[in-house]
Image 1: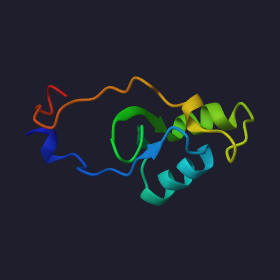
Image 2: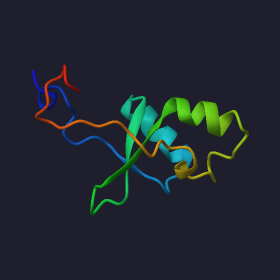
Image 3: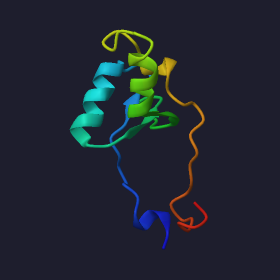
Image 4: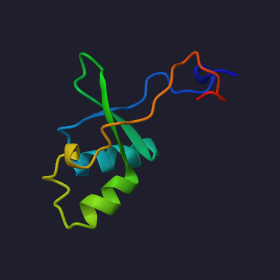
Length: 91
């Protein structure tokens, strides 16, 4: 089985300039635990990943204002990725 057989082809994404609050709402609405972070809608270039744990353990735990804090301060800028043609075992 290949990655393309189980992946979400067009995942909901966010931008690094999005607020922690808006990203938390997207995570809730989409019922997911993480979102890819893209540079912009035109390029779709992956620049990171943000997780619900990032929001809780960094934004909330440090007392930052979720409405005013952009996720670029907490997102992981080095996400592990794989190609659609790779086997699930390789991925």
